Image 1 (tube, rainbow, N blue to C red):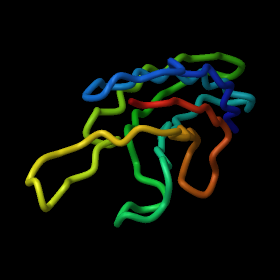
Image 2: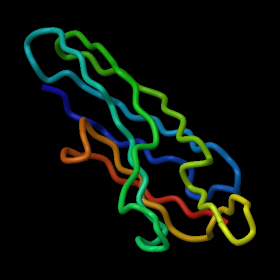
Image 3: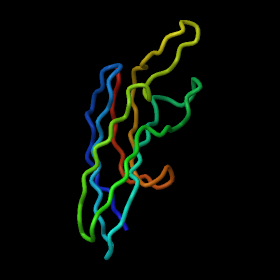
Image 4: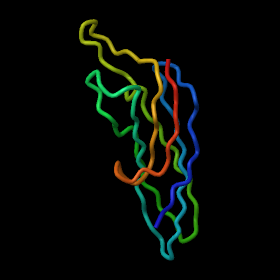
Length: 117
């Protein structure tokens, strides 16, 4: 069994910039194990054709019993962008995005907020 321990990303993100996210995973079980750490991005506001949450990055990790391992993920800038069909360009909306990490979209144990714009 793994337990995710949060490490918040940067609080402000300039447009067009990738977001580094670090998650520390601790194996609380009695045998070695493997976990896929997933980071999801939600925001700035549902609507405008944007899904509620999108997968931003993922990485697998292996840990011995009692071992803690830090995973470094990079959420690409394009995850924060919206395509403006009228202008035929990508735009980075200003606002608050929520970064959630866990073992799946239904088991998210870390939440951090980042502002763009």
